Image (tube, rainbow, N blue to C red):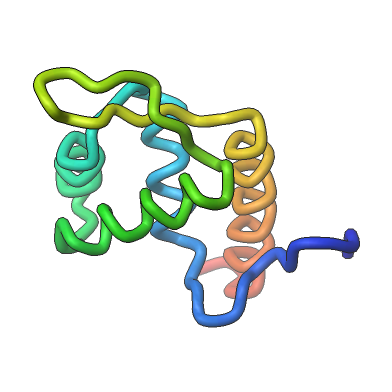
Length: 103
């Protein structure tokens, strides 16, 4: 494992982070409510507050950035570091799925 930031931070399940980063890669820029709606469209049950808190955390870590503010709504986009984190999480989740074997 590489030195530096742990792949899975303590107290953080990476699935929601992975999904939010992936949505921003696919559909940026998006406001927090747009991210929330995209998660719901994919069948992911999450409350809006969790999305707002996670976006704030991702922004403080430099993984997402404010791209624009339109009508008072902050629209977020993925940074280069965010794309790297998305790829790390994809590898992690892929390895976790392999643990279950064939179903």
